[in-house]
Image 1: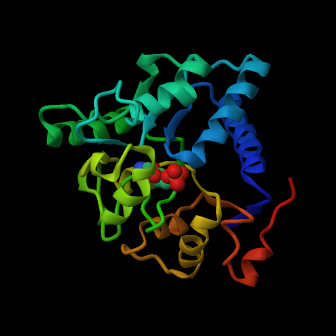
Image 2: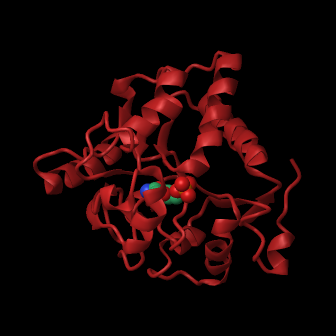
Length: 251
Ligand code: GLP
């Protein structure tokens, strides 16, 4: 189902409320987390709301989708650093509650196997938050990734390196590889929510709307999930056909 909200602020409020509600219902929630600029207002709103409510976050467990290979946790563009900055530190979520793939491990293949196992050992993901790349990637699962994939090493596409180059001094500094949770790991979550904001996501959202389930459009798999939502703002909904408009929700 596609839901259209007016702007990133409204999406942040909506998702912050949803996350708070999930954690209140289940203080031991196993939460799959994403990075990227789409998530920043969502985490900011959640931190404020969690503080206002005195929400108990001590027992949640989190797993991030991905990490660049070759970036140390303290590197400003690593996803470890992103998560500490935008969510973990401000919300007071402790190191022992969180997991991200290590981009600095010696044996990446072993790291991948262990990461999927760790998710399963935690009882699986209760809720997975996703962004989307302009080529339809989720996590770092690039077009063509088998839907049966578990955590694995990815050669990042030129498209993804170009898009993500905006966070680095220049594109040549964008790592060429990453570790990502696989599509099967993502789909095994009990609930999946994909978020897209901004007009630069309008084309990929229209493509996602039109595409049947297809490995060339990795995000399309979530349309086969029993409990999924695709949430876009007006700008990202610009090119959606009329029938998607019917799913607009008030906020
Ligand atoms: C990166 C991340 C994805 C994220 C995507 C979109 O490639 N690996 O998980 O969805 O960026 O990022 P943004 O929200 O900045 O557009």
